[in-house]
Image 1 (tube, rainbow, N blue to C red):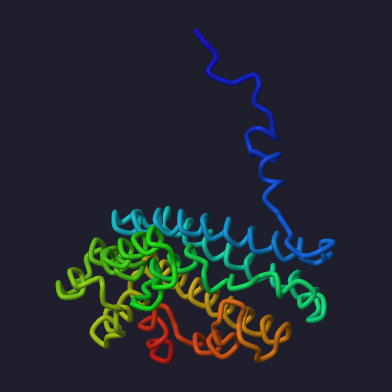
Image 2 (tube, one colour):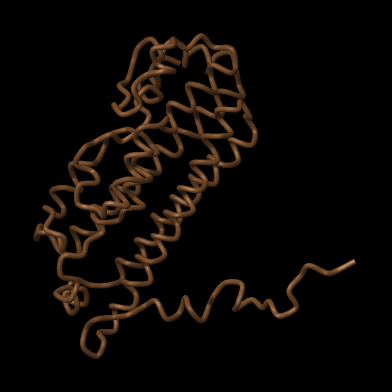
Amino acid sequence: MSNSQDPALTYSSYLAVDELLTLQRPLSDGPEHDELLFIVIHQTYELWFKQVIHEIQAAQRSLESGNTFYSLGLLGRIRTILKVCVSQIDILETMTPLQFNSFRGRLSSSSGFQSAQFREVEALFGRRDSKMAGHLSLQAQERIKEITSARSVWDSTLKYLSCRGYEIPTKYLERDFNVAYQANPEIQEILLRVHRNDPESSMICERLVDIDEGLQEWRYRHVKMVERTIGHKVGTGGSSGVGYLSSTLFHPTFPDLWAIRDRF
């Protein structure tokens, strides 16, 4: 009987460490000390975004199959990853405005606004906006188009509730997924019944509130980090910087779950 394990496999080769450590390429002269931190933080964000996409898609499949407890684990993991993303801002904020400006000019038109993976995360959570991907590569635009034509996390949750026996109207289960979901009193009445009579489904709803709160926390901390670093300057990608980021605050991802909070 043959051993399928590769005896030459090591920690370094499995994780491609040697290759990984060549991917931080500062552009400033010297280079400036803080540019490495800036690169490492943002590369790490992209890795976490990749993982969040992986977890969201698994959570959607789990929800749509009616698997409560596996869904709870996946949704909890997503929330925990968001907490890590927020905590990384603490590290980035150890860099002063002067330190950032020592290499900011080298960033040219590059900007976090151009993160295709974060746009994918937003689309999976239900954002439907024709402007959200227009500045991205054609390949990224195709990925986002595919996501926005399918169920969002909330649509998967409605299907989960339908699997649990709740009479979700067909017009919501089979709606046009290219259009953003709008908060609806009819769904809110069903959610109230869920919370009052179905502890398992209620836990799913509360885990989604955790995630929604985490997304809003991420946006707020991101805005304040940018403001303390560049003030109200135009963003490196030509965006309005703090002005644009501030406009994204306090918009819940799952509005129906917030609309019922004063009715318990």
